[in-house]
Length: 127
Image (cartoon, rainbow, N blue to C red; front, side, top):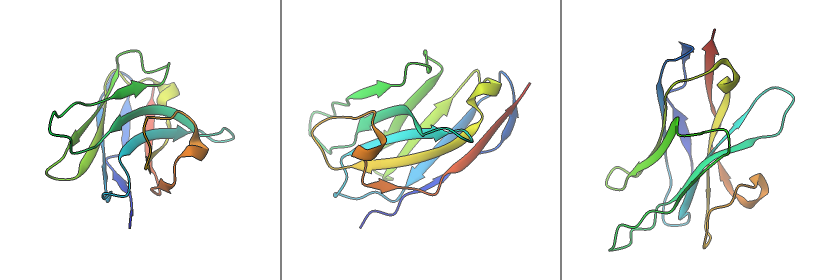
């Protein structure tokens, strides 16, 4: 059973950094992603990686177009955690950030493709 839980959201000033964490996945989900939602909008894809426990430790990672090198998705396989390091935050990054998971062969940027979701963690960036 996959029960995702996000943490790490906070209120920061523009230019600051935050690290979001996601826990609760298991072998039923091999692709982990971060999405975000601002009021009145659909969830937007932020980043995705595969968490397969492959012997070669190869990671497949993709990012949303607006990330532009500011965010980094990573994982700690031993702790079963996925992280989103966010640097150089901007007011437009203010959103509820969600962790999502799917069992698949590749990452997807589409919200309906993910079967499991956390409750979200709020990130607020002030000017």
